[in-house]
Length: 297
Ligand SMILES: Cc1cc2nc3c(=O)[nH]c(=O)nc-3n(C[C@H](O)[C@H](O)[C@H](O)COP(=O)(O)O)c2cc1C
Image (cartoon, rainbow, N blue to C red; front, side, top):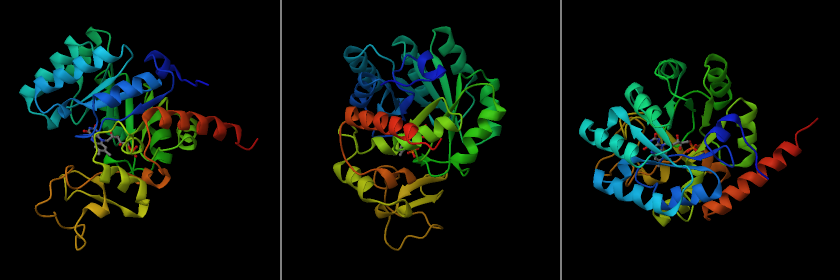
């Protein structure tokens, strides 16, 4: 049974769920499987090593589904020439949803809106949310404490209603959402979409190595470390991928961030299997309805 919000309907989704963009490991197969399962799949443009690789991914997705998908562009972290090429490709292939992060989205908002695309912008606090709102984005993604990747410091219980109360655009909840119960809680807090990364690492379609998928299943939330010593920005990583003698004040030597040191969030707590995206979405929807029906009245 479908459930929806004004934003999920505006985006043409069956469910108000986004499979969040993940550096290196999101791929075309995930975008297609998500689209076919009725949710929004997202991928960083930089998962194409070159702009030509990114174009090949867009061609593959366009050939396999006519449903919506999203591309993430990390404005301030991407070489300007590459960013310009990726934006032009999003225009050429009419990417329906653009997800911006790390920088001023004004120009991308103008260009996306000129062709009817929507822009979601990712923040960890109200100050950056207000700036992005002024730049004209269609929704704000609030990335809470415990999220996989670069995570904020504010609990989702506080962040989502806080953004909702202080913004006029819809809010998307990100961080620690891995089950239908957590989706129900996020919608109760005022989110119009939920944004799940860690849950989709152990999906069959995900490009992560098998050992990474298994580690997400096997790790507990106590084994997630929050540090800025690995990528320069505070992010959450699996403790098991760090040297045993590593301490949070040190940058580990030799290992490559994201490639050898794997990221995941507190949401590992509720992840128990490696399965297809179709099965994950079915479970999320079933759990959501069960959770809502079981609320005390
Ligand atoms: C391995 C990994 C890589 C990520 N890479 C990116 C990225 O390139 N761009 C981005 O905006 N967010 C990135 N994120 C953050 C996710 O898009 C999303 O905000 C986060 O996973 C949501 O929290 P959750 O993992 O608790 O579900 C990444 C997250 C993970 C786990």
